[in-house]
Length: 154
Image 1 (cartoon, rainbow, N blue to C red):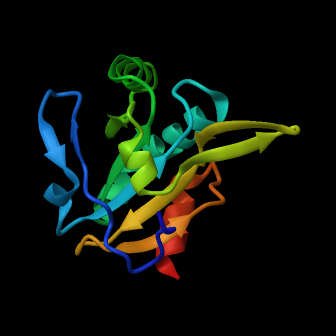
Image 2: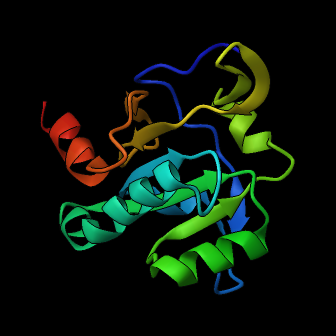
């Protein structure tokens, strides 16, 4: 698959939210979407990132953003993560990695010389028309909400 770039149509997908309602990315047309991909629930960097988006959630919503997180964790893991950290946004369980692959964030990683398959922490900002407006590959986990707003003000 070719790497997604700014201006591309965001790949569609459906998910069942914590409320049991199935939604599709297309349901968010007319809104800006912060689609953040993260490696694993309840890990230090992922928790910082999710909590930054939680803490900035009201401000992001006032600017017209919706927030959706995606990882390969199970739905039950997401429920625990959402509850433990009071996360107000949807978390998508992509255990078959179809969404991760569609966005090109699943692949080989390397830490201290060891290779393994994993998720590259990446955020896509999708505009009201469903087009990719921004791709953030160097995520500032501690201040991610502010990072997204700054990126969109460019």
